[in-house]
Amino acid sequence: MQPIKTKLFPIAIAIALCFAASAQADVPAGNFWHNPTFEAGTPGIPPETGTPDNWNRGGADASILHWSTGNSVSSSHSLGVVKPVAGAFGEWYSDFAIAGFASAGDVLALHWHEMFNISGGEMRLTLRLLDGGGGGPNSGDHHFVVSGNSSGWVSTLADSSFTTRNELSGGNAGLLGPIVVAADTVYVRLQLVSGGGDSTIGSYLIDDLSVSVVPEPTSIALLGMGALVGVNAIRRRRMAR
Image (cartoon, rainbow, N blue to C red; front, side, top):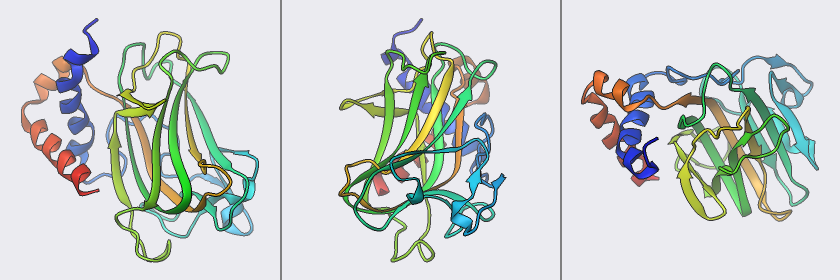
């Protein structure tokens, strides 16, 4: 197996292939995550109390977990944490069995759209690699933490716009590393969490959330140098945030 450092440049090219090649799509080719647009689900009254398929409410306060119709990228729904006052945390979570979709050593890439307006703390999207018993492998969790205002925030959920995120490495205990499937990984878990302690207030919406396997370098070479254009585009987008 190649050392992680020798894979960094091919991985950078690969993420461009996963996302830039499908620049017009909200859900990139290669996605294996279920219900990525959050449109399938069980309606609720009021609407935000409904539940999207394959997602569960957890934490100490489920009332802040919204199947939101306040704004969305595709069609009519997004997934949200809406916490107008200080109080207990809540989290959405969803598990996916990766057999047949990803294998040990594969690098995973995340793509999603987000908007947020957060003060007094932070919120996050977390990817966890779990073994058959629900424990975390040595590779740890990958946290994508947000606070303050997203670049498209104006004044409300309704008048703000989503910002696109593409990631294949996430923070864990202060360290940034690629999302590499461990030998004992059976499930991938995604969590949308209020986090940051009881003082956190605000809203965090995500939509069109996808997970895909980064192609091997040999596949990248066959697809050609057009991927480099995508790498530069991703770099510019990140610098703009």
